[in-house]
Amino acid sequence: MTITDTKWFVAYWRFIRRFSDWLERLGMLALVGMVITVLVDVVGSKGFNSPLPGSTEISSMLQVAAVSGGMAYAKIDGWHIRVDFMVERLPESVQGVLEILVSLMTLGFFVVGAVMSFENGLSLRQSGTETLLIGIPLYPFAFFISLFCAVMSLVIIGDIFGAIDKTRR
Image (cartoon, rainbow, N blue to C red; front, side, top):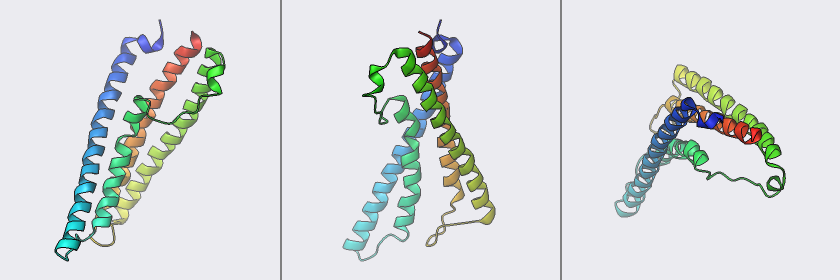
């Protein structure tokens, strides 16, 4: 029996998939918010000579959620770029070992990203740092990035178990 067929792993993967789906929807809402912000800004500035104050700041903050929101879901669905033309020619067990090593390095990157973003959010909250024009607090966006990196780490852990199964076959 493989690890990925166990009851706990199936429940773990189902939870991660649902949570990633929810984060992706949050990212899509942020993308819609960016579109509406730009639309209001352009129509206001060209049609009424009154641009939306802080539209660049609003778009920038929404972009954090838009880009980060889909990361984990894209990884689950295989939308990330992989260069496999050399690895495909290796035996399946060697492919599994390489996949484990790459996944461990990627996991390290996202764990560090989650921790550093969280610490940055705490620092921004303590200092009260805001955007220049309209005063949007920056710390919630650092916490969002930390959350998205943590979820991505959980997805990568699932990939590691899958690679272990591939290596054991």
